[in-house]
Length: 75
Image 1 (cartoon, rainbow, N blue to C red):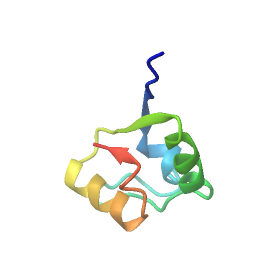
Image 2 (image 1 turned 45 degrees about the horizontal axis):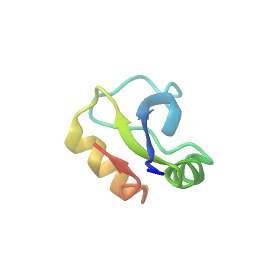
Image 3 (image 1 turned 135 degrees about the vertical axis):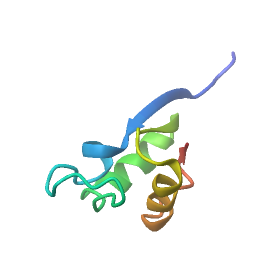
Image 4 (image 1 turned 120 degrees about the vertical axis):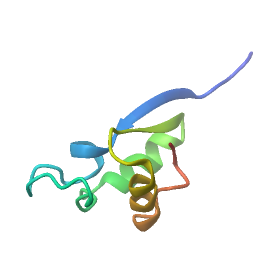
């Protein structure tokens, strides 16, 4: 039997970060939500995770690194 991981797109704004607390600024990504890192770690156990965002990819990649979740999400 062939086993494979599902692919899941994970939105950045409002799912992983605290989007909506401050006015939108395209150069700043808000802080990570409480529990988001654990959510990603657990979800990664059975699915390949892809970051879904319309934000600047370099800025998004830096945010993932800063929050130590870059190893769980593909851009």
